[in-house]
Image (cartoon, rainbow, N blue to C red):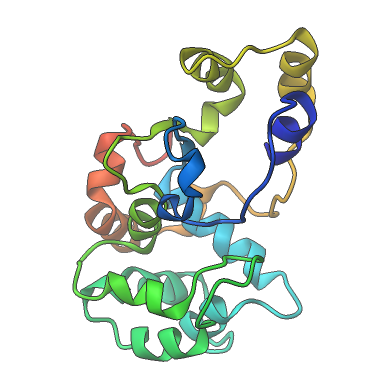
Length: 211
Protein backbone atom coordinates (compact mmCIF):
# COMPACT_ATOMS: atom_id res chain seq x y z
CA UNK A 1 0.00 0.00 0.00
CA UNK A 2 2.85 2.41 0.78
CA UNK A 3 4.45 1.57 -2.55
CA UNK A 4 1.16 2.21 -4.37
CA UNK A 5 0.59 5.59 -2.77
CA UNK A 6 4.16 6.79 -3.34
CA UNK A 7 4.23 5.54 -6.92
CA UNK A 8 0.89 6.83 -8.20
CA UNK A 9 0.11 9.92 -6.14
CA UNK A 10 2.60 12.73 -6.89
CA UNK A 11 1.91 14.61 -3.66
CA UNK A 12 2.35 11.54 -1.46
CA UNK A 13 5.24 11.46 0.99
CA UNK A 14 6.04 9.23 3.91
CA UNK A 15 6.43 11.18 7.16
CA UNK A 16 6.51 8.35 9.67
CA UNK A 17 6.09 4.66 10.27
CA UNK A 18 3.34 3.12 12.40
CA UNK A 19 2.85 6.45 14.16
CA UNK A 20 -0.37 7.54 15.87
CA UNK A 21 -2.61 10.11 14.26
CA UNK A 22 -1.84 12.70 16.92
CA UNK A 23 1.72 12.94 15.59
CA UNK A 24 0.63 14.13 12.14
CA UNK A 25 2.41 17.48 11.53
CA UNK A 26 0.23 20.46 12.34
CA UNK A 27 0.19 21.72 8.75
CA UNK A 28 -1.34 18.41 7.58
CA UNK A 29 -3.96 17.85 10.26
CA UNK A 30 -6.77 19.36 8.20
CA UNK A 31 -6.44 16.54 5.66
CA UNK A 32 -8.78 13.53 5.89
CA UNK A 33 -7.37 10.45 7.61
CA UNK A 34 -7.67 7.14 5.77
CA UNK A 35 -6.92 3.84 7.42
CA UNK A 36 -7.28 0.08 7.43
CA UNK A 37 -8.55 -2.35 10.04
CA UNK A 38 -8.34 -6.12 10.06
CA UNK A 39 -10.06 -9.09 11.66
CA UNK A 40 -8.60 -9.36 15.18
CA UNK A 41 -8.62 -13.18 15.14
CA UNK A 42 -6.62 -13.06 11.91
CA UNK A 43 -4.32 -10.31 13.20
CA UNK A 44 -3.12 -12.35 16.16
CA UNK A 45 -2.32 -15.36 13.96
CA UNK A 46 -0.47 -13.22 11.42
CA UNK A 47 1.53 -11.42 14.11
CA UNK A 48 2.47 -14.65 15.85
CA UNK A 49 3.44 -16.43 12.61
CA UNK A 50 5.59 -13.52 11.45
CA UNK A 51 7.42 -13.05 14.73
CA UNK A 52 7.93 -16.73 15.47
CA UNK A 53 9.61 -17.13 12.07
CA UNK A 54 12.26 -14.50 12.80
CA UNK A 55 15.74 -15.28 14.08
CA UNK A 56 15.39 -12.32 16.43
CA UNK A 57 11.72 -11.58 17.12
CA UNK A 58 10.78 -8.27 18.69
CA UNK A 59 10.55 -7.56 22.41
CA UNK A 60 6.76 -7.84 22.37
CA UNK A 61 6.97 -11.41 21.14
CA UNK A 62 9.89 -12.38 23.39
CA UNK A 63 8.10 -11.21 26.53
CA UNK A 64 4.66 -12.55 25.70
CA UNK A 65 5.96 -15.90 24.48
CA UNK A 66 8.25 -16.08 27.51
CA UNK A 67 11.31 -16.42 25.27
CA UNK A 68 9.60 -18.87 22.96
CA UNK A 69 8.45 -21.32 25.61
CA UNK A 70 4.79 -20.52 24.99
CA UNK A 71 3.04 -21.59 21.80
CA UNK A 72 0.35 -19.68 19.99
CA UNK A 73 -2.33 -20.12 22.63
CA UNK A 74 -0.17 -19.13 25.60
CA UNK A 75 1.39 -16.19 23.81
CA UNK A 76 -1.91 -14.74 22.60
CA UNK A 77 -3.56 -15.25 25.98
CA UNK A 78 -0.74 -13.21 27.51
CA UNK A 79 -1.30 -10.57 24.85
CA UNK A 80 -5.04 -10.42 25.47
CA UNK A 81 -4.55 -10.06 29.22
CA UNK A 82 -2.30 -6.97 29.00
CA UNK A 83 -5.30 -4.68 29.43
CA UNK A 84 -6.89 -6.79 32.16
CA UNK A 85 -4.15 -6.85 34.75
CA UNK A 86 -1.89 -9.31 32.93
CA UNK A 87 1.40 -9.81 34.72
CA UNK A 88 3.56 -9.22 31.64
CA UNK A 89 2.74 -5.54 31.13
CA UNK A 90 5.38 -4.02 33.41
CA UNK A 91 8.07 -6.28 31.95
CA UNK A 92 6.98 -5.37 28.46
CA UNK A 93 6.87 -1.62 29.09
CA UNK A 94 10.46 -1.85 30.34
CA UNK A 95 11.57 -4.03 27.42
CA UNK A 96 10.20 -1.76 24.69
CA UNK A 97 12.06 1.40 23.59
CA UNK A 98 11.30 4.62 25.45
CA UNK A 99 10.82 6.56 22.22
CA UNK A 100 9.88 5.96 18.58
CA UNK A 101 12.48 4.08 16.56
CA UNK A 102 10.97 4.32 13.08
CA UNK A 103 11.00 0.57 12.51
CA UNK A 104 9.09 -2.58 13.40
CA UNK A 105 6.04 -2.11 15.60
CA UNK A 106 7.41 1.33 16.54
CA UNK A 107 5.50 1.33 19.82
CA UNK A 108 7.31 2.85 22.81
CA UNK A 109 6.85 1.19 26.18
CA UNK A 110 5.22 4.24 27.79
CA UNK A 111 2.62 4.29 25.01
CA UNK A 112 1.73 0.63 25.50
CA UNK A 113 1.40 1.37 29.21
CA UNK A 114 -1.87 3.08 28.33
CA UNK A 115 -3.53 -0.31 27.89
CA UNK A 116 -3.40 -0.90 31.64
CA UNK A 117 -6.79 -1.66 33.21
CA UNK A 118 -8.70 -0.92 29.99
CA UNK A 119 -9.90 -4.52 29.70
CA UNK A 120 -9.53 -4.45 25.91
CA UNK A 121 -7.45 -6.63 23.62
CA UNK A 122 -4.07 -5.61 22.26
CA UNK A 123 -5.37 -5.11 18.73
CA UNK A 124 -8.25 -2.94 19.91
CA UNK A 125 -5.82 -0.84 21.92
CA UNK A 126 -3.50 -0.52 18.93
CA UNK A 127 -6.40 0.54 16.71
CA UNK A 128 -7.56 3.25 19.12
CA UNK A 129 -3.99 4.41 19.75
CA UNK A 130 -3.40 4.87 16.00
CA UNK A 131 -6.71 6.44 14.95
CA UNK A 132 -7.99 8.44 17.92
CA UNK A 133 -8.94 11.99 16.98
CA UNK A 134 -11.71 14.56 17.14
CA UNK A 135 -12.81 13.91 13.55
CA UNK A 136 -13.51 10.23 12.73
CA UNK A 137 -11.04 8.59 10.37
CA UNK A 138 -12.17 6.94 7.13
CA UNK A 139 -11.38 3.29 7.84
CA UNK A 140 -12.02 0.29 5.62
CA UNK A 141 -11.47 -3.42 6.20
CA UNK A 142 -8.07 -4.64 5.06
CA UNK A 143 -9.53 -7.86 3.68
CA UNK A 144 -11.29 -5.93 0.91
CA UNK A 145 -8.94 -3.00 0.53
CA UNK A 146 -8.17 -3.53 -3.16
CA UNK A 147 -11.81 -2.90 -4.01
CA UNK A 148 -12.59 -0.43 -1.23
CA UNK A 149 -9.70 2.01 -1.58
CA UNK A 150 -10.54 3.60 -4.97
CA UNK A 151 -14.04 4.73 -3.91
CA UNK A 152 -12.70 5.67 -0.48
CA UNK A 153 -10.07 7.92 -2.02
CA UNK A 154 -12.65 9.36 -4.40
CA UNK A 155 -14.79 10.48 -1.48
CA UNK A 156 -11.93 12.69 -0.29
CA UNK A 157 -11.16 14.07 -3.75
CA UNK A 158 -8.23 11.88 -4.78
CA UNK A 159 -8.51 10.65 -8.36
CA UNK A 160 -7.38 7.16 -9.36
CA UNK A 161 -5.60 6.73 -12.70
CA UNK A 162 -6.10 3.53 -14.73
CA UNK A 163 -2.46 2.59 -14.06
CA UNK A 164 -2.96 3.03 -10.31
CA UNK A 165 -6.12 0.94 -10.35
CA UNK A 166 -4.41 -1.79 -12.37
CA UNK A 167 -1.48 -1.93 -9.94
CA UNK A 168 -3.82 -2.10 -6.97
CA UNK A 169 -5.64 -5.09 -8.44
CA UNK A 170 -2.60 -7.05 -9.64
CA UNK A 171 0.28 -6.35 -7.24
CA UNK A 172 1.20 -9.35 -5.07
CA UNK A 173 0.94 -9.00 -1.28
CA UNK A 174 4.07 -7.89 0.56
CA UNK A 175 5.34 -8.30 4.12
CA UNK A 176 3.27 -11.45 4.56
CA UNK A 177 3.67 -14.40 6.93
CA UNK A 178 3.19 -18.09 6.20
CA UNK A 179 0.49 -19.78 8.24
CA UNK A 180 -2.59 -21.96 7.97
CA UNK A 181 -6.11 -20.56 7.90
CA UNK A 182 -6.45 -18.51 11.07
CA UNK A 183 -9.42 -20.50 12.39
CA UNK A 184 -7.21 -23.57 12.79
CA UNK A 185 -5.19 -21.90 15.57
CA UNK A 186 -8.07 -21.32 18.00
CA UNK A 187 -9.85 -23.53 20.43
CA UNK A 188 -13.24 -22.37 21.67
CA UNK A 189 -11.89 -20.72 24.78
CA UNK A 190 -9.27 -18.58 23.04
CA UNK A 191 -11.70 -17.71 20.24
CA UNK A 192 -14.19 -16.45 22.82
CA UNK A 193 -11.53 -14.50 24.70
CA UNK A 194 -10.70 -12.56 21.53
CA UNK A 195 -14.42 -11.97 21.03
CA UNK A 196 -14.62 -10.57 24.57
CA UNK A 197 -11.49 -8.41 24.59
CA UNK A 198 -11.89 -7.10 21.04
CA UNK A 199 -15.67 -7.26 20.93
CA UNK A 200 -16.38 -3.58 20.28
CA UNK A 201 -14.05 -3.50 17.29
CA UNK A 202 -15.40 -6.80 15.98
CA UNK A 203 -18.96 -5.47 16.19
CA UNK A 204 -18.12 -2.07 14.71
CA UNK A 205 -16.69 -3.58 11.53
CA UNK A 206 -18.94 -6.62 11.33
CA UNK A 207 -16.33 -9.32 11.70
CA UNK A 208 -17.30 -12.92 12.30
CA UNK A 209 -15.04 -15.80 13.23
CA UNK A 210 -14.39 -17.99 10.20
CA UNK A 211 -15.52 -15.57 7.50
